[in-house]
Picture 1 (spheres, rainbow, N blue to C red):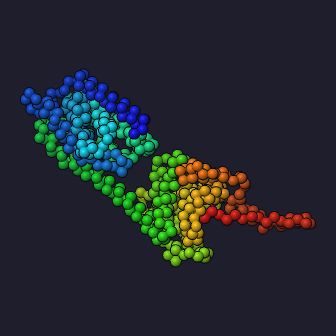
Picture 2 (cartoon, one colour):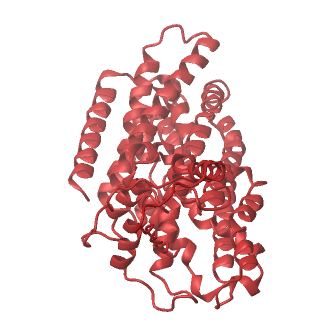
Length: 466
């Protein structure tokens, strides 16, 4: 546990304890929480709401981003409405205990954090609710309860994202957005919570049990969301592996490219959405090779001109395959343009410099580095990472974006290796400029050479193998 995480847990736990003490000492428990007109009716009511919250906590679903979502939010808000801050605080403290905590699967500081993250927002929401006048009117009470539930929700959401960010090392914005869909759907339980409170007061505790079905249905919706997300993820990974395994030399290639590209993206501080696009784009960048015949894809000899043209179509084929999948729309530019060259001589669209999508430029560097450091039929002895770095530097500004290569040098893949640095900056004619010069040369006769002058023979560098 890092110091920052430990300090955060200690601060939240201390604040939660102070709030609970204030709730118990400053606010009277509302008699409406009493389950029956008996000497211990208030405590029986408190036990009822705690038990209901425990049942909701036992149905927790782990979301793709790592957070746990359950339906205990509804009974806690209902307890807040019926009993006040003290009842809300105790229900949140005890009623959110999970079986994994009892089995010792969660370290003590994690359990403390989990309870504090829920208890403090619940008490603050209940305190605000307690101060709103005119709650005798149903419409006022309904709106006030929704407002208090929103305070509870958003404070809990922000604190949970902070805790997750410190624990995982992710950016706060990434943690905040990781499971936003599941969290926001939880807020929709606030009206149900108000109805639960009304039924408890007007009909009795047994009427609240009728809400077990809608709460369980909500839990099933969370579970289906996670299952669909996992199925989508596994399908994408299976597609990537199917492409890679057509050739024994490229097995695992897409996964390695994905990791390298994401590391470059983190160094370049791309947005969370762009980082996710690199994640999926890295896996699917070669999906178009499904449409390349084995006679071309697996050929160990030099490709003919027609075969090379067929191979160069795979980014276009990949984009066509992915286009119907609207969820993967951000990945389309990566898949189509990851073989464009910085000087405009790549394929399929011969884009130049900044015309190439930035994420495609990132993936191009990752793809080339992985290819150069792995065995291929045309090069059985792979380059060392240091040699591959030299090639990336050599062709920076020609094949690769120099800024992306600069970012790659700061990743773990070549960390502490000798860096040859950027090559000497030289003006490279772009395709449009060359076309213009050629057109001018056709219409203008060449100047006569002086006696004894020999025109220089331009040198041609072989591009880095990608």
